[in-house]
Length: 311
Image (cartoon, rainbow, N blue to C red; front, side, top):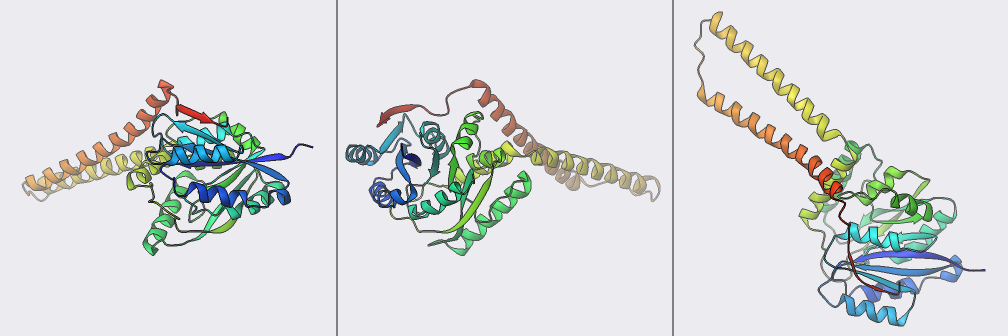
């Protein structure tokens, strides 16, 4: 009887130091006890260090290691999408290359999957080596996202999870751009389970998760899965209209009832500047929706593969 395969999808950008350790820890798991074999599918997001050479060595050593290399840097979510689309296993685990998510948690994910869950989230029970400020910021971010998108998000967020083949195939039917993969999976539904783990400190190298990337992901979450910004703009517009009428009424009463001359260029300019700023902000929000619609209409590929190994 043929052994079922679990795909492990790992995006990598300049992770030459971490990839050999990741492979060793994955290979050391009790795969016979899990009644599974594995394939490690690493998507190289156009690394500029020794990552391609390291991956070539791993492929030569073990045919279970497979790689894709992008023609340029398309981002981690595009890398995850490419990995899931090329994964051949009965299920796939998404695992970062930096070893912050311990591969030793995979058997627990597999157990929940074998018990019937189609999506298994590894929820951060804590974070090693991160400041209290970072942890509080993460909690606030996911609380706001959950509030605006009506999705049940763990307080510390998720990066590490397992997807059944049915979920992977459903994702293929939603080839969205400028979106959040986590939000897409949440939106799909299916039977879900979660388990807690300790997120570890980065083994080597520096995090590529910059502030600009976090802001971009936040916009993708909110614009892609919520009408909150549009409703908020409508509410602000009605509030400003009400305040404008109220201010006009005050001026009329002052002028004709109390015979007080209408003056105040400073207050007028302040009102003009505030309303202009709010209007520009609203146009920016509309621009986010419009640009995403335009980008989707061009139907450019979400990623371009430069080289394959083992596939």
